[in-house]
Length: 246
Image (cartoon, rainbow, N blue to C red):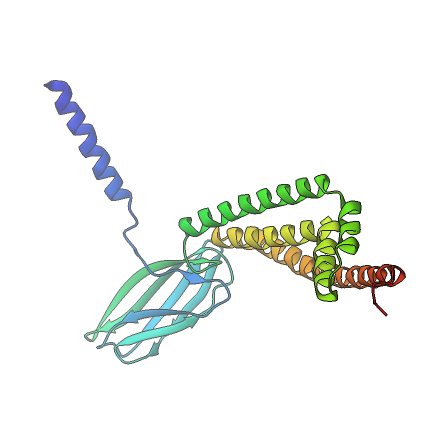
């Protein structure tokens, strides 16, 4: 019986400690880095409200006047860092000076980690890795020389040959698929980092994604050139076989 009483006492003490450890200052909606965030404070009877904003680096705004927007006072603020911002204010509510305080987080996405989206992105990343492995495996097992001969030998009309030639060109140059899949992988990974609100790493991956996107244009140009060259060679082969091509 004594042990149960002690157990109840420790549980009660833990709950009291947990509750007392909660931040007594209210938290507002998250802000997004680089976007205007309207700091607001309702007060229909105030003739003025001034606020100061702080973060761990020091004072961001020092005793600035808020704008009267009817029953609510607002101040447009654009955070530039992924930090917690504390707001302390004072106004003459009902003719008597009264203070208030609250805080908000500034994050890269404007919200806390969105776990379902992050999990979906991770599943997509794994799927892209699986697709990449499949493409490399199929490329290794494919006899492209026989495939090339079959396109010529099975020629019926130019439209069919063009389609078969395009598919052949696309799969023969496996680096095109690898490049494209890796490009998608980087874009999804970039979104995962965005959801984790890591601004420094996100800017790094943004640079990589931009460079990779420019490289993709070169890959597409190469693909068009290879396909054009292959079709020209195929037409010459069919013409030499006297299949009615001029």
